[in-house]
Length: 234
Image (tube, rainbow, N blue to C red; front, side):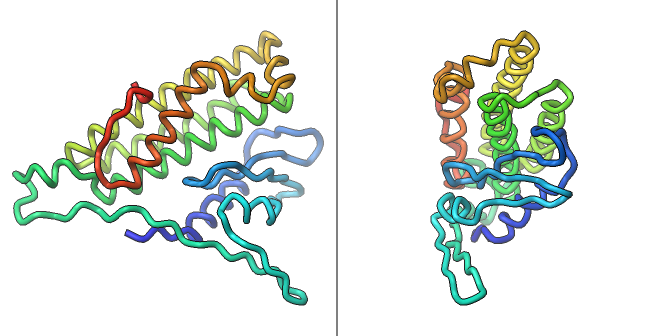
């Protein structure tokens, strides 16, 4: 299956236009744009109802390139391949091979859930490390979106491999929720200054490392079209 990166990019950018809790003062909102399957993030500023992202940062994240021709700026982005879906055998009900592969519908829903959790975690981390206010209501918005995406992945699970992979996604969701709740409580007790003083303080914590390791594994597994397991997701 060919993953249309341009369509995904437009979808990701559309999220930035949705109303949410203000992270900065006055009429600007500082956010981050995270592209699923690509490391790093680009800072986004929302001003007067519009979202702005640095094109150079976007090009670097996606391994793309910028070309300047007279009054035009051309952003070239290479597509990303997701591994081919498992072949459907003649008897899909009784065939072990079919039950071992991830279905296309689940792969799509799983990738959406993974991207939603990554946006949740990345935005929380960025806010804490830069001293922005975070509240339970704000965190709940991201949690509810991730929970909704997880429900869609659950509904799409149709094979044994899908259901096993769903459990790993659920475990990651619970880990991110625990981590998010911990940061909200730390902010309430004024115990987040340590994260601003050291750029690696938050990342080096045990729960953060668990989430990062499981996230990397899930991204690889969902792109392989077959179920695999890893201790970091348990």
